Image (cartoon, rainbow, N blue to C red; front, side, top):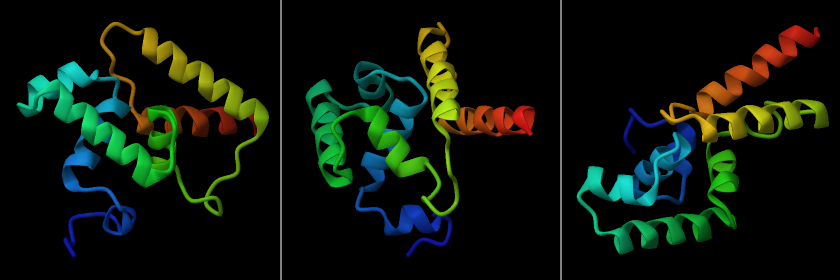
Length: 118
């Protein structure tokens, strides 16, 4: 095991390349952008995406991102209102031209929502 990887990454069924592609998609990059950056053919990126979706038992990349990066169920409980607010943050980030949204930013937004409501 690689000590620089988190426990979740060490236990993940994903390969290093699949994790790399999942992270890139989580920050808003397209398959074409990922292919250019990693020197991969578009079909290769698409195959990696297909494989990681199967391994994580997800139908969409959004679901895969949350499955892989979100805290375990016993670490976080999210209310419907928080889910809706968080979804709005993610959707707004998708419309953002610089595509700088990340899972960490989404979780920080959730934390801010909780502090605001406390």
